[in-house]
Length: 182
Image 1 (cartoon, rainbow, N blue to C red):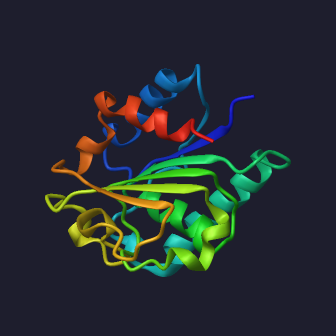
Image 2 (tube, rainbow, N blue to C red):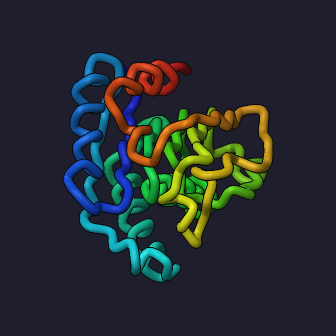
């Protein structure tokens, strides 16, 4: 049985923000059960407010618990603001995940992974000091500076990519390989 894989998009500013999910789903279909999650438009301006982010995470938590009930923890691949959602599901909502990829994450860079290490198998963070967009996120700049706190099952992988280059199809084979590992 293929493990379910949640694909979570970032702030929806143009169709490219969502297009990567469909391409990833098609490329991974033989190895992963990809569950694309388009939770709608996310306002970049409103995302600075905790109540707004909490509302989005609430919906994603309900979705994950409903759709994945009775299944082993899903893999997660997320980009930008979607990484904040994925991080919140593990760290604050205690949703069990398996392998997690955070691409250019707008998530807290000083995360103490030990506080919720039972909620993931492995995490890989792709970040770049060239990411101008994440440098503006007030709720976390992990995508610009990497994961600052180490953990044996968390890999912080520095790149030279710009923000949207993390979701180019040429990179998907590497992501699929990571996610399919037990």
